[in-house]
Each structure stands twice: as C-alpha cells, then as structure tokens.
Image (tube, rainbow, N blue to C red; front, side):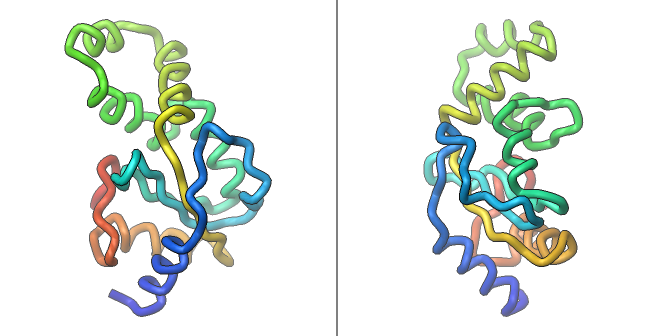
Length: 146
C-alpha cells in the first residue's frame, strides 16, 4: 500500500459524514475527487468523480440507474437486502422509471457519504481502485469490490 494512498484514506475518514437526505450540499465542490458511500457502518461503494463530485452526487441522489453503476448496484443488490421475497419479485417486474424512483428514495433514506477533492481524475481513480482492491485500511465495498 502506498503511503500517499493511505494518507488520502486517513484524510477521508476525518471528513464529516453527510446524509444524502440533506442533498444538495454546498460543501461538495465542482471538482474531481474520490468518495465513499456508507449504509450505517458498512462501506457499500467507493467512487471517483473525474469531472465534478457535485454532479456525481446529484446523479446518485436522483437514482438514475441507466449508465450509473452506483444506482444499478443500489437497485439490483442493496435494496433487495431490505425486501422480502414477494416485494423483490414484484420489484423486478416494474418499469425502469419506477426502479429509478425507488433507488433514489433508498439513497436518500439510507445512505451517507464522505469525499475528498483531488487535483485530477487519475489521482481520484488510483485511490478509489486501491480501496476497492482492499489495499488500504478500509474494508472492500459491498457493491464494487475488485
């Protein structure tokens, strides 16, 4: 594990924990960075935003799963942990739009996040990849481990 990557993770863990239910958040910058998403005490997602952390979180809060791996994971795997079998079967038969609405509601009601801005996407991606691979003191995320 690189000392620089672990230092970035330590910085991340010292940052405030924000609730998606409080979105929008004026503290989130329009710059690249890496971030983590939690469900209670469980790390569920690690991501890198190459263009804008603000834009990335905005998409997550809207629950739009088309082209958004985070929202796809929330819809396909995370929400189902909280449903009984009948609800899960009914959910799989609903339209994509309805699934997006449910994902957005789940994100806002259950998830929180931390973030650290970086100079560029390559730094953010390297840190996120190291976390996902288990090469830091953080656990691997539930939805996107490597």
